[in-house]
Amino acid sequence: MKTIEGYFKTINYPGRGIIVGANKTLTEIFIAYFIMGRSENSKNRIFELDEEKNLTTKPFKKEKVENEELIIYRAVAKFKEKIVISNGRHTETILKGLENGKTFNESLNKTSFEEDPPILTPRISALLELDEPKIKYTLSIIKSNQNETSVKRFFYSYQPALKATGHLIHTYMKKENNETNSFFGEPIELKTPETLDDFEKEIWNSLNQENKISLFTMSINIKTKEEKTKIINKNQ
Image 1: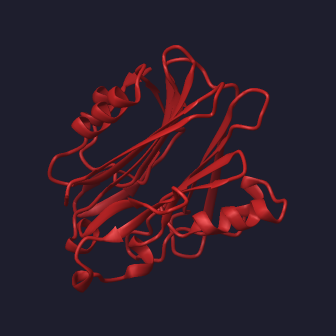
Image 2: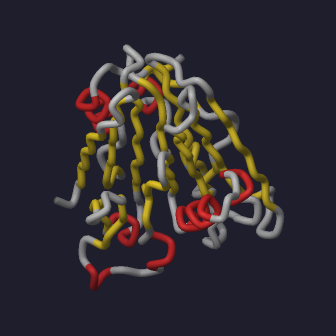
Image 3: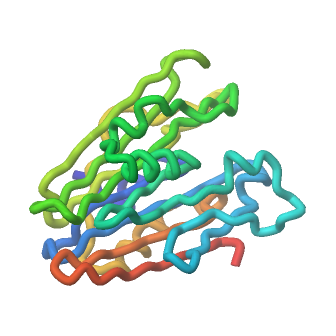
């Protein structure tokens, strides 16, 4: 199992990422969503919580926004005792599916990767189910199968959550010869700390200084369901 710091030292540009897992005493569940960027359009963003405590991406400077559909979206939202996290507008696809009685997997069955050739950025997402007898979470990645017409969909479910253990999935592995490689393999198993403050600090301090943009972290008390949230925006 890797530490958060140890893992991010091995990868310079993970892109956008999701972490879900439990703290050391198995009293809280942690969630993290982070975004990074290389282009001016990608870097021109901040995180905000709306009145219903949904996490959304917002432009830092509205006049500089390009390709809004790819960078502005609801990233974290709740549906009853479930929490949805994603790196794009498929948050809405998942929520609509849940509202219509579909499972997480069924909701994403027709979703494809992003239409941003030649990169073809994967769509990553997670569902945390707090209404289960034992805490369950599922991570997903949907990516190109070597070209712009073929899709690969992967789902990884974890139940019950284990103490001091989290799982990370992100969009990119590395950049070589100006080519961006999609994340591959199973989600990365990480050691998680005891407190939300430590969780936030470990992630933010480990991400590449030049490319990190925003980080959202959240803790949910397993017994009381009390929630705490934290946001770091490099642009603020």
